[in-house]
Amino acid sequence: MTVPTITLNDGNRIPQLGYGTFKVPAADAQRAVSEALELGYRHIDTAAIYGNEAEVGAAIAASGVARDELFVTTKLWNDRHDGDEPNAAIAESLDKLGIEKLDLYLIHWPTPAKDNYLHAWQKLIQLREAGLTRSIGVSNFLVPHLEKIVSATGVVPAVDQIELHPAYQQREVTSWAAAHDVRIEAWGPLGQGKYPLFDDPAVAGPASAHGKSPAQVVIRWHLQHEHVLFPKSVHRERLAQNIDVFDFALTDAEVAAIDAIDPGDGSGRVSSHPDEVN
Ligand code: NAD
View: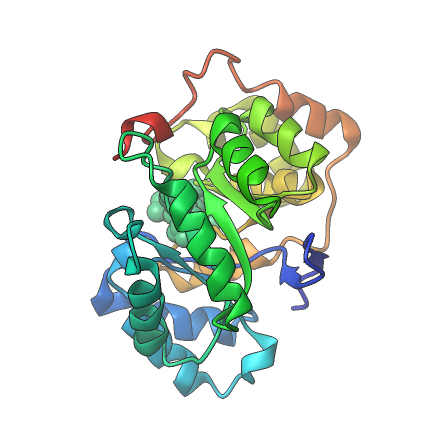
């Protein structure tokens, strides 16, 4: 299974589809990541706060997959924006992951009440210059947060990883990102199983028309919108299903019908609002 890559604004390439490890308990993580790597996933998304970096690292080490074939992302947690904390945090993550350099390091949340994400961004720029990560980006940044770091540093993040699925499309952020060549990574791409996406006729209809599952239709919708995504499952058959999405395409009309699922008033959001996470 070959997953297409996308070129980021810094010239680095990222596999468009990966495996996400939020809420994959440490006890399951090594097996699940090993299975993902066996099935052809080459992009793993984790975070310090997920508590599974060591198990992700163990699976990478045991896989025999060459380091330069893998894309590994982790994230700086909210209580480590200050002073030299980002330097210590990335060192700890690299140690747990058992690698010398990340492919992508993200500020996990802007935590605007603490208002130190600009400092954290300046530190990530230095970490990239020091060779500890190939690319740097942000997560859960809304337009004011993005404008603040870009106007202060002139350095545009390679990605913004945000909650995005058919019921919550964040068009303000995606428009800004498109205008500034920031790639959108869609977290909760399946609505975390909390929004009844799979029963919506705009998803269920194409699923039966193409002989695919509703999850595969939603993943395909993301791919056709050129999002990067990394759906999460701990079940091998779902891991296999979620990467088996390159042998069909939604029609323009099918994509448009899924676009119309978003109620447009923010009520499709299934997780925390960035202004409320601190
Ligand atoms: P998701 O939308 O990927 O939903 C995962 C859930 O979808 C699973 O628990 C399962 O219930 C269901 N599912 C998965 N595959 C399925 C299938 N084939 N058929 C039916 N149901 C299926 O949600 P997520 O895990 O929150 O998001 C994906 C990744 O995004 C995470 O693992 C993590 O890496 C990242 N993430 C980042 C942030 C952030 O703040 N940056 C927040 C949440 C998640």
